[in-house]
Structure formats: C-alpha cells, structure tokens
Length: 319
View 1 (tube, one colour):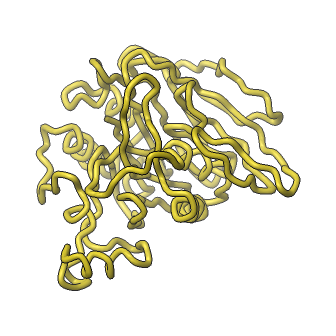
View 2: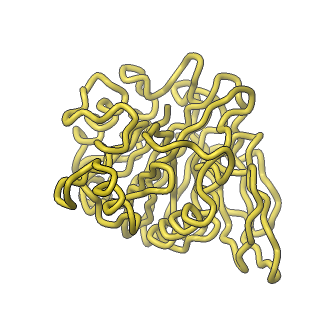
View 3: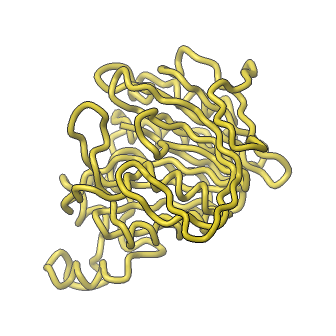
C-alpha cells in the first residue's frame, strides 16, 4: 500500500537524483519523523529491533527516519552520507517467519550502517541471510508480508526484492524506476541469492537459468506482463515516465499527492507520511511530511542532528 520512485540525473531538470515515497499505513496509526545522531558503540553492544536483538556495529550514521511510533524500524528515511531507502510490502509464495527483522527494521539498519547505496544494499542482504524477515507488521491486527526496497544515493540506485530468504537486486542505470506492492524484477536481476536459481530449478519452478523469472515465480498471484495504467503501480510508473528529462521536486510532489491512482491514499489504509529527497554531490536536501495526506500538507525541510537527541518537530519551509 505504498509507492516509491527514483528519477536519475538523465531524467531530472537539474541532473540530481530525486527520490520520493508515500507511506500508507493502517488508518489512525501515528507515524513520526525523527532524527538520530551518529554514534560510536563499544564492542559487544547489541541493538533491540522491533522483535529481535542483534549485535550493534561500531559506528552508525546520523539518520532522518519516518517511522510508525510503535516499531523500532522505519518506512523510509535518509542518512548523512546521502543514502535514501524506502520499502514496500509484497506478498509471495514463500512462508512468513513468525519473528525476525521487519522490512522496516532493515530500512533503518541499512541507513544507519550503509555509507553508499550499494553498501546499504549489502547490509540488508547480509542481515536478511543471518536473521530472516518476519513478525507482525501492524500494531493492532495481524498483518505479515515480505519486502522490496528502493535504495539510492547521488551515484546509483538499486531495487532489492525479497521472497522469504530469497532475493534479487537490480541496478537502475537511467531514467526513472518505481516500486509498489508487487514484485517487479523480471528474470534474475543483476545480483541474486546464491541458491535461488538452483532451488527454483530443483523444485520445478523453471527448467534452466534462462527461464528464471523472479517476479513471475515468487509472486503470490503471479505478475502481468503489462501493468494497467489505471492501477496504482501503473499510475506511478506512467507519471514518472511522462516527466522523463523534466522531472523536478514539483513533479515528485504532484505524484505523491495524486488521487487518480490512489497514490495519496484515504480509507482503511491511508498515507501517514511522505518523503522527497534531492541528492547531488554538491548539496542534498530532504523534505518530509509527518502527518496524514500529502494532498493537505506542506513538505518540511529536515537536517541531520549533531547530537543523539530525537527531534519530533522539524523546521517548516514553505514549498
């Protein structure tokens, strides 16, 4: 019930990278925008994620996170090194673990530990292999799913899609790319779980590496070769493509406020937070909405803290 997109320099008016995401969560759930400063930890310290505890690393980067208040992890965010990540719920043929790291935990861990988009990708992959993904993703009712991620910095962008322990990753090299709530990487991607192709052949999902199609084989309901433009996924993709070469911050705002495709969602699930980031080697900027419905709100410019203080009230800039 979320949508995430990225426009690479060849698609934007100022040759920056523009990233955007809406976080669609159960109606009434509180989602905060918070900041945490960079920290140094002593050897042997551990971090309590939403459901499980894992070893802490020696150093974490300062982060801005948009996160449901009840969980440790985040729906989306950015770090001081210019890395941004958003995740999407996806439903697959693989069973959900009873507990493990939530996809939102993996977003936060990737941002706290990843110096670049590729490094954050590796963080998430390694943690997924060690601890798996699992646990209830809603505060007041049962809601479980697997995850896909869009990870970007000013130099590169990646889509990482998962089905249980399996994963594939695709590097985005030009234009625009979006993800919604379906697996979207066709074929084997640019990187993949070391056993996924062999296991797919062994279980009869495909006959050879040439026939391997991650999205088709692991989606709970299969995938369509052509995404309908009237669907939410199709609407985001269409709006991104229509602005190739002229994509700007105002374009990102218009997409995230769009009602025709229910991108700005109202109902039992609703858009509880939103993020837009402009990434460049010269200066990166990060805007967030920390309350429901981007169609009714202004984006607020956020900066990284120099202390560990949690800041709930960002500085508002009229946009």
